[in-house]
Length: 178
Image 1 (cartoon, rainbow, N blue to C red):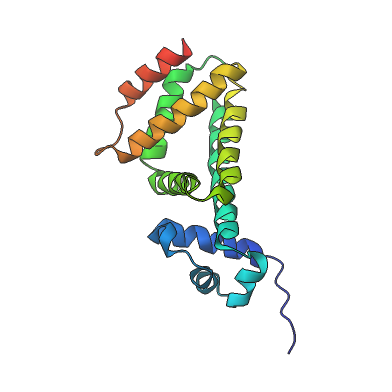
Image 2: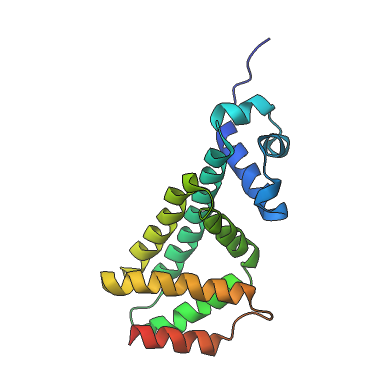
């Protein structure tokens, strides 16, 4: 039997894993569900990802890269005289509203590192990437504090019924950034 050339199979499996988690949560992800979603043989998922934690780590990294790309685009679009507190509050509201599903997915994956040590490197990479983006706007220590505050404010915005109040988010950010 001829082997089918499929150079993007690994990426399709990762994308399938992200979709399964996004729709049904981490508990729904198995090698079998990822293979079915990616339309590949089960052996392909176990070939590329020996353990479920390896597949989850790849999904965490993929989602983090996408979210950081969105953050970088946002930071690059800021005018030189932008009020960072105002702009960042608006961005958090956008992530909690229009991009809610992606944000929930990111935090679900991020939080999974609490119980799965194999995912910690991918989750901490998210914080490092956030800090790097914020360092383009503020000093390193403030960037680290802003990363923690950003994560906390966005998480609160996602779990608060009705979503965040932009003015309240901005007030908290302004206190840190003044």
